[in-house]
Length: 295
Image 1 (cartoon, helix red, strand yellow):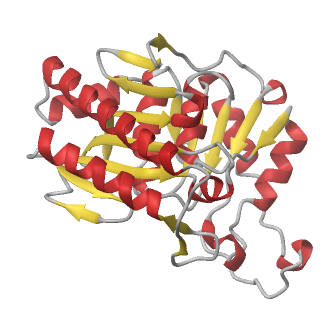
Image 2: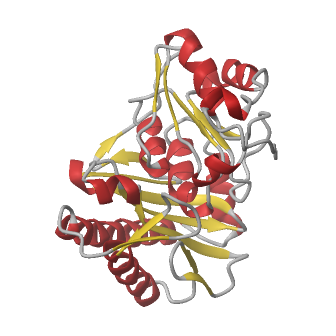
């Protein structure tokens, strides 16, 4: 079990247990409010726009939910900086900071696929402390804080007890830039599908991490992620007894864009397999024009 980092970050930020409880309640309420907005728009979207990459969408629901969250956080914790996906940074974001994704899984949401969430994490110098992942379609709120634990709604959760990669069910995703680079996770998906009971791709990193914390799946890996995809989920996984690291097994860095989150029993085996994988050539998946590889 590794919850020391969350607790240490809270201590460095000068938060006592009363502060942690108060801030956790703020994150839960803000996420709950956003979830209600999302469900009001679910299946009734008025506008869908594309951002930098094809498939990277933003909707009127994202913007409305984010505005609601930011207003709530600013009102109830005015001294804490905020980094959010659509509105950017506000305040001294190198210190205590809320990290907000109002709608993780926008493509799912836009198509009526119910795997989407609001993710609100609190960090200190980019180290997760606590967070909430609200999955409104399923009426599930995943949340965690040091000294309190990890929960789904009011039920305590813990990562699975899986000990062998061959017995595991994994989850992963593919970054929006996958059509432009060979470092696209295709080869890793094939390798691990062959060596496990299966690999799922649901399309919402925050939900994937919540499912790791609750033991529904045994491990998750992905690249090309942003802080708002990971901040809340990483805190929840660690409080639920999970292991968080980079692809080499080193300490997880929120701004690296890469993560392995797993039950401790398969962490080493998963890292070993991932480090054996070489990227597929573009022509192998119908994209001969892609010939670059960036780590």
